Image (tube, rainbow, N blue to C red; front, side, top):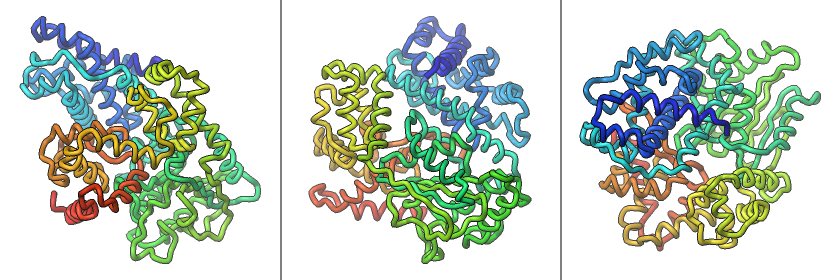
Length: 572
C-alpha cells in the first residue's frame, strides 16, 4: 500500500477539523483536534467515499475525492461539510456540487452534482453517527457533546486506507473504462445494467496469484483452434472463484454478471437484462431500449451476440464473465433449457467464462469448450494459498501473534496453509481473527481445519459465551440474516427476529462481523447501514443447522416465516 490513501484521509480530516476552529469552545476544539476525533473522522470519510464510489457506476466521479489536494480540502467546501455537526444551518450542497463538477474533466451532463454532494454528505453523516466520538453530537444536536474516546483501532484505519487504495487502483483499471462506456448510453439502457463496482472492489482487494489459471484461459481464448466457446472454472465453495472472476473483469474490462443469492441477483431475467444492456452499451449497438421479449428466452441475447460478432475486428474477442452459475435459479419458463438461457452455440469471437461449484450446472453446448477444475490440494492452489498468507504476515497484529507463538514466517505460512485445507474463504475469516487477537493464546495446531469446521467452531464459541442469550436473541438474529435474500437494516432485523433491542442486535452484528458485508444504502431519501452475508457457503452451513434438533429452535419454521413475510411484502 502506498502513502496515497493515508495522505488523502489525513488532509481531508485536517481541513474539516480546521474549518471548525473558532466556532466551538476551546475545550471542544481540543477534543476535536485530539487523536480520537481525527481517527473517527478519517474512518467516517473513508467509508463514505468508498460507499459513494461503489454505488451506481459513480467510480469515475469519485476521482476528485481521492485527491489529497482535491475540492474537499478547499476551505469553502470544508466549511460547508462541518455543518453536518454544527446544526446552525444546512450544508450548502449547491456550492459543494459546483466545486465538485468543476474539478472533473468533461463531467457527464446528466449528473446533477448538487444531488451527488447531497448523497456523499448523507453517507458521511451516517458514518459519523456510527462512531463513538460523534454519536453523542447527533443525539443531542450539540457539537459540544463530542466524546473524547473511541474504539477505532489502528488496524481498522489501515483497513479503511486499504479500501481507498483499492478504489484508486480500480479507477485506473480497464473495468473503469468499461463503466465509462456504460455511462454514455441513454437511461433506458443504462438503468438495466447492474452495478457490481462494490463487489469487484471487495473481491479483488488483496488478490494474489492465479497466474496459472489466467494462462489457461488466455490460451483457450487466444488459441488458433478456438473461434468462440465456453471456458468453465469449477471448484469448491471458498476456493476463490469469485475473486478470480472479479479480477478478470477488473483487469480486462470484460462484460460481466455475478449471481449473488444473498441479494436476489440470480434470475435469468436479471442476467438477460444486464448482459444485453452491457452488449448494447459497450459495442454501441443501435438500440434505444431492450426488446420487450428480452427476458422470455435467449432470442434477443443471441441476436445481440451476432451483432457484436459482426462488428469485431480480426483477432478481436468479446469475453463475458459469469460468476457462480450454481447460484442461478431456474424458473418455470426455463425448465429444460440451460441455466440463464445460455446459448448452446456462440458466434465467432464470443467467449463466455463462467464459474461453478461442480459440473451439475454446466450448460449443454455445441461449440468449443474447456474447463479447469481448481482442486483444493493441487500444488498450484496450495502455492497461491501460501502466497496469500505470506502477504498477510506483514500485518502488525499477525506479526504479534507469530512472535507470541514463536513462529517464523515460513512456519506460519505452512501451518496455516495446512489448516485452511486450500480454502481462501477460510483465510478470509481466520486471518482477521488472528490479527485481532482472538487466537492469541491458541497455537495454530488447535485451530479448526477447513471452512466447514471453522463455521462450526465459531458457532460453538458464540453459543458458549452465554447459552441463554444465544437462544433468547442471538440465534433468531442470525437466522434473520441468513434467510432474507437482500441486505437488511436493523429495523428489518427487529421485525424478522422479534428482537426489539437495537443494542442487542448491534452486539450480534459485531460478534459475526467477519461473516457480514456492511454497506450504506440510500432508501426513501435516507441512508442507512445494511447487512448481508459475505459468502454463500454460510447459507449451506445454516441449511445443515436447520436440521439440528438440539438447537431448541425450529429453524425451518422461523426461516419459512421470514421468507414468506419478505415475499409477501408485508413490511413495505
